[in-house]
Image (cartoon, rainbow, N blue to C red; front, top):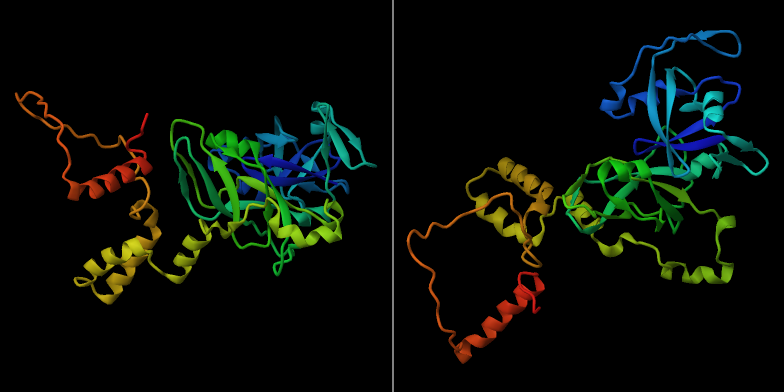
Length: 350
């Protein structure tokens, strides 16, 4: 049986082995840790023996923050060449007062039940990774595109031709490290891009980098489904977050096809006259890669205090002007500009 453990924004299945006196992680699992964590490795002092009496090399030890059942526990692990991703040993089970209930497939950890998984169950649980680096502005909520992380040659039991319901569960360690809130979501795992809703409640912008892993996706099997067969027709009308908002899919499609959005076509055409065909193609790729930095012409421009300007008026004192009535033929234009500023949040009626 396996215990899914969150380690620095990644889920690692730990094989529970009460016959092992220590907890181990494989060399591959260690290599996938953040660089600053890998640098804390210490020289291994213990000699590691297998059950058959053979000896394996101890490649070092380090202390890891392990997220289990919503709690973060610190524990020392040893690094070695083992067949599994990781082994949960007797030292962890005793230090954290674990009680195993093999019949019900749960482990009681510090008074809380955590469901275990068999090797077969592992095929239905995946990590998801962010497809493109995005910046979540302060106080904003975004839908971020994610994809399944595929490991090795395993077969993922996802029906790509239809709808495959799944639950997205955020990783606590990811939220704490990035100061961001990730929503639990019901999604369609058969989509190429799986939407993930995030919110930045802080006073500073947060960057989510490409390939970072913010959540775990678990497929919903038929015997777990709440709906009966007669309700399957209304499956699409459930409150499932779809990627059909085109918020993620359109940008991915344009990048895949090399298509510039409308608001950048004029810019590309103006610079084309002075560039060769090769240079023009390279320039369009740069525009496509950084299209999120250009204003599309609709919606608010945003605000920044990165650059500040001062206007030196010298000794001139402020002046007042009496309000004047706008000529009737300019009234419509003024009303339209006021509406634009109102919609963009530049002004408000209160």
